[in-house]
Length: 226
Image (cartoon, rainbow, N blue to C red; front, side, top):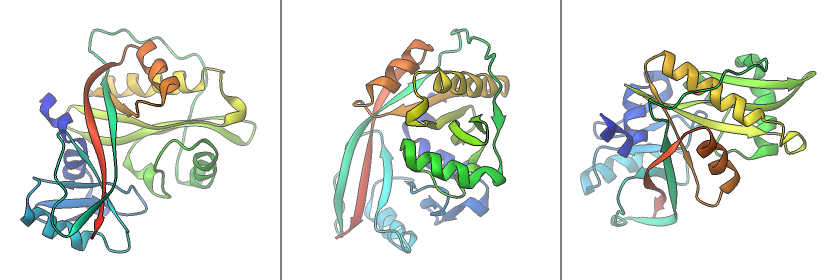
């Protein structure tokens, strides 16, 4: 079952509701307002022929791959970055979260987009919240921290969009949000996992302190039509 984690986007797309995904027989993508990620069944010419029509108004396709891939004919590589995939082992105990956390909903999207612009947690769109549970922390009416669920498929849920306003860092907000989501996923019978770029050392240190361990390195590849 852990092999599903080798291609988290493809399996998340397969499990996502139809209204959040645009599908071809061997390729798929999230709708642009949800996430910029694409998935493919395999890396062959037939699949990439199906990938091209999915671009629509998007300038590029973002893929997660377990192994290095050759750029197919008709495409060019815009960017390629390694990313650490970390999982929380079942025997790691999770601390209770004493802080009050707010379940975020559609009415909070404007505040979430503003926080994402300030904190830059990675891709976050006006409908990303539809992928799963998002939790937040407010100071008065101001949303100052959030985290939520992105790639979910049988047995696994990814913690993503971990964001803290720069003026509020160092207060343990990201820690509590990550713990709360991990506990929620475990209670639902799913293993928590996440992704972090190697140069984001502060985030990696936090996740390691909570018990997350490296599973493997993946590649995030941006491809555009040549």
